[in-house]
Length: 143
Image (cartoon, one colour):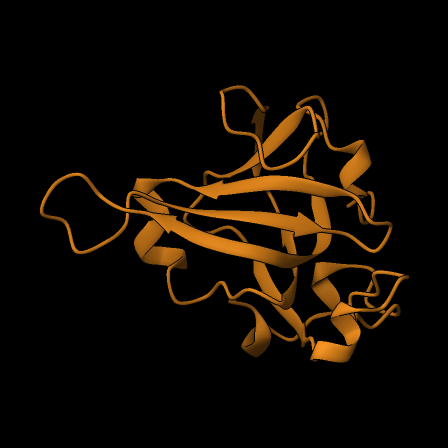
């Protein structure tokens, strides 16, 4: 793995993207049928440099990630897709959006963020800087 990517550097030409982010906003879009699950899970991610990007879990993977993602929590995520940030409603100015496209996508919860950390001007993610590779994380912590 080439390391941790910054949100500002995310684009569709990079393979094996890996980011350390905090979910700063999380909401669901309702399903239009009789499904008890939402149509999608929508998020805004923040990295330690202050970069923001919209991320989306589409209908096919909502059941996999529904109870794993929380607002205010930091994660290390890799192997996600990237698409153009098009449409009328844009939550960030980033040119691209992140898409959860794989059911076995590694998602690791790094730390719970307390209210005082959310006000930190450095946008610290509360991560352990010695964790440079997903392989350093014990399997029991991998989601």
